[in-house]
Length: 133
Image 1 (cartoon, one colour):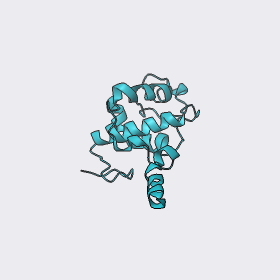
Image 2: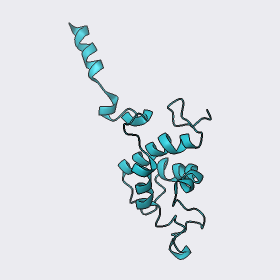
Image 3: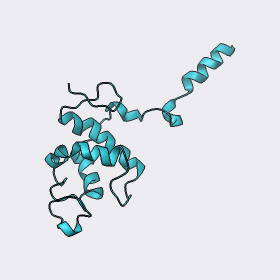
């Protein structure tokens, strides 16, 4: 009886619910999937384009170098690795700290599940380290 109770407790213990496991959507099996149109475009517009836009005058770019623009899907692809490094892996961007932790997680999931695979970088091991297929 004791063994059955212990087994039941172990099975009922879900690391995701306790906050210790990887996010449930870590495997990119979300339905519908996150896309540029459904997720990325709005996140980028809300948190990045005030500085990283070709339409923003240099004096109002908050120090973002001219040319580091995220206005289009192609721009996001070109800047994907720096975006991940500065806005997903750390909280260095946006500098005003307006992005919530949930938004940062969503940005990371979208980058991992749509953007990086579009660049041919696929996380085959689920460890966050992209690999060439």
